[in-house]
Length: 354
Ligand code: MRU
Image 1 (tube, helix red, strand yellow):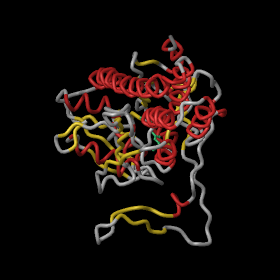
Image 2 (tube, protein in one colour; image 1 turned 90 degrees about the vertical axis):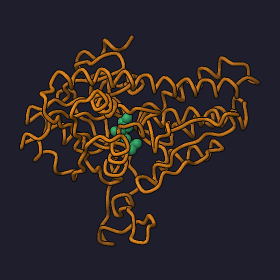
Image 3 (tube, helix red, strand yellow; image 1 turned 120 degrees about the vertical axis):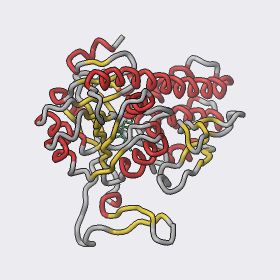
């Protein structure tokens, strides 16, 4: 996607395959900063601190983390060390483990002294596949929107950030939005702020603005009211993991939006590339839900009057806080799952496993 008329992806290797560039998402929307990642350790830190985030992007970042590891040491021992570090960096989004396992498969089939070369090639493939999958999700999503579109502003509500910043390019939930906007449809997006880290207010709003898509940031509690008022035509969210039964694990708060959508008879879609589907899990209770540091709840980050990015405390010093980062929307509340192949009812999702 474009920033100031220049095309960017969220992650790309240096031309000599010695390091990786990322967009530091902790600085957005106030600063657009490109950072170089030079080692496995730095990549693990970038994932943990959410300089890179979003399920498909942390998959690609982990793949490049493996490539950086192979630059450091091509041995079996170091390979296993890298796998452990990366897989434990963020547990919920299955794309990360999927990408690491795919890298392991490619590397185990390569001669040890070719592992470095193989790793960079495979990581680039994973990144490129994500871009193509998201483009296709955009086209399938566009068809659904066109189906319901009635020559007046079409309102889509989304939660968290599942746009191009959460992927290598185009986004998942926002790919249909960009496709519809680019096709000349009158699209408006309600952007849930998405406490505690505000990925909606900071990231979704920023990238929609850069693309010229009309949008309005709302508090996380406002969606139900807007739905009752007839101001939402469709919900589209991304996902960190979808079970084989079609349950959708996504950023905390998604479930409440799905309940309100169901009550108001508004379609609720999850847009996911196939690496986000975890065929090994049928029962959503088996998903490891990441609990992040309570600091993200007790404080909030924003732009201070002097232009610096600062964090301020929100709650009494005596109070404790909990930070469950994801929740699960049961399949019964999901209208459809938009993949790169097609749109599937949750009960039909198994047809996409080929
Ligand atoms: O904690 P984050 O910011 O990595 O969470 C991201 C989300 O929950 C996204 O909705 C999800 O990863 C889908 S991204 C295409």
